[in-house]
Image 1 (cartoon, helix red, strand yellow):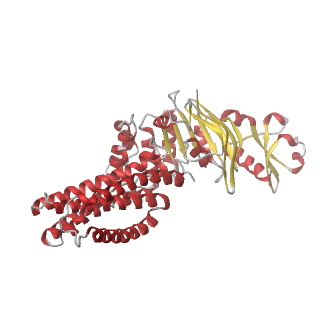
Image 2: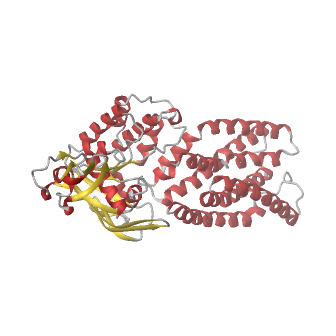
Image 3: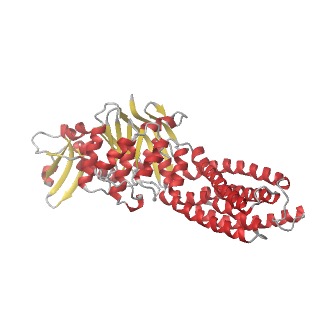
Length: 206
Length: 283
């Protein structure tokens, strides 16, 4: 598994630099714009968490799966590595967010907790939906689905804010209201892993 | 122990069937898999590696059923080179070393870099900048650097220039100096198989036409160049293939079934395969 993660990190090295730079810009913009800071900050971990999809695209381009099938890897490991990469990306984005919040002096606030929870829900949801689709139908179709998922996410988020009676994310609400959505998305994530393993087997056994 | 034992292996696609394949690669030997495009060579290799479902039969690799959970560990002992090298395009050989070091327990970086040096491959250039020959050399270096007992090579020498092919065939020969090492190689380049192999299997339209020791095969068959009248004197059962020309015919015969009076010429492996393919095509 470490080899698979290393392979993805080596493959994504150019993107990682670029994404880091973009996240840095987002962090600076969020620092300047205090009113929309929470909303903008969410983008840092979310933005970086789409990298597993890019890694899958590179695998597809080089037909890596054909080679990986000959190596002592199980399908479970091949699939799980992408999800672990996704979580590592979220952690990296989360750390950047922490630095941005630390500099802004708002790290230990209820608003930061809600920003983290929103980002985590969004990231888990995005990965849970796009990874199985990309594995089943290929990355191109997966990207189309990603756009559909983003649109759906916005609708859900707006709906959630309305239900909670919160008009804007920057209104501090803490982590408590996010507990049930977080659990639901975590469960969806596990289902997604199982589905991806199944789809991978189906796609590569033709 | 045999390196590979295949019994009754079948796989059906629309328009193609691999039918009831029986094949054995004894340990320490090199088996060449010949056949035209679409004959079933790559399908056989994929089934040996259990990367696609089969419709019937069994495959044992290095003594282990390839559908058993233990086969994953056996993959540590198998070096595979496919018709293309499928490394991620942006990876450099140095990064390939780092990645494969984590994939194979017995990965030997020293051996890998020695092969890179021997093949004059740059260590820090991205894989995508390599020529086809360089890519295949990298794949071969990787396949040999985790101390495999079995090499499975699917058209690994195709597209390489004759000098590089010769160099690589020497490496494969070196590999089998250890009596525990075996090679299964599929190739369109019959002359490579003739140089390298101990056994030859010939697949035609998903069916095994022959599988014999190469030396025996070369002794068994001969070429006769005859006029139409001379041809009448050759027993029909001796004729294994025929090519008509303006002067009569060129026929592949079983040496033992024709009179020593005929001037039999040496049949190359390529002659044998081509004549048999022609015969099978007609049957």
